[in-house]
Image (cartoon, rainbow, N blue to C red; front, side, top):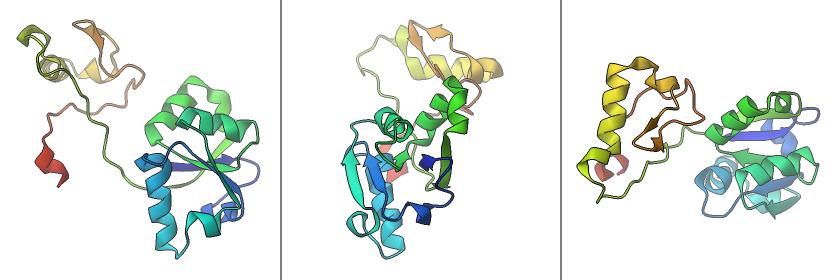
Length: 167
């Protein structure tokens, strides 16, 4: 998770003391929970550290709130920020990553367990990845589903996971 602020004003996280802080929603690990944990580590909480806290509703809205000066800083999922910076290079001159907390677990890919075998997305994606290393930078549809769309060059591998990996 990256903590971002306007480039001209905030250089380190502590510069955000007393600022207006945006979060996407309370159940977001990257947009809310990790900030709480980071503040606890320095003996603070959101109410004592920030001057005002605003719910934005999404990471993209939080970024927009910084750009239009409604808020001073926010916690953004690193993948979301990377995609926004890639799609909108002009943001590099307007936003600044003041710190990063994590790493956080990657979001799971979820598909219907009743898909026919011919549409087994894990098998399709992993076999294409293994046989074609360029798959990591491909946005070609696999049985009508775009795998890795927008993440050109950033996917290192595709693996199957299970619940025990997160306990």
